[in-house]
Length: 88
Image (cartoon, rainbow, N blue to C red; front, top):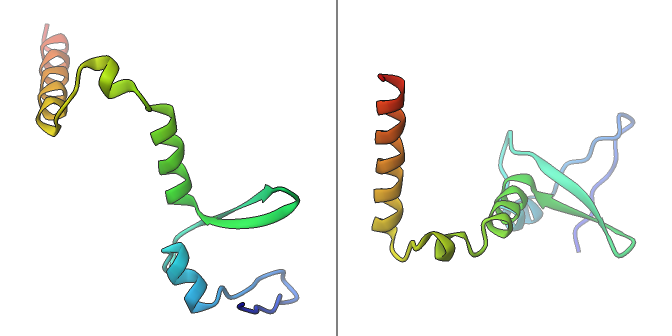
């Protein structure tokens, strides 16, 4: 268990071990969530990544993307189409 003191301005210093477990460093942001009546602190970047992964779940299969090269090829094709549209 780690302990932190709240300052008169409502600030706390997150203990080093907790920062390591969250994977945060100077300048990073954390988010506070309520879960089952408790307040949970999470790395905001990790939370955003989880949200994106959930939103895109099943999309690769739907698009027929089976390998990393399939994704690279799709990105190249989209860029090529956009360039053609810009210069048309």
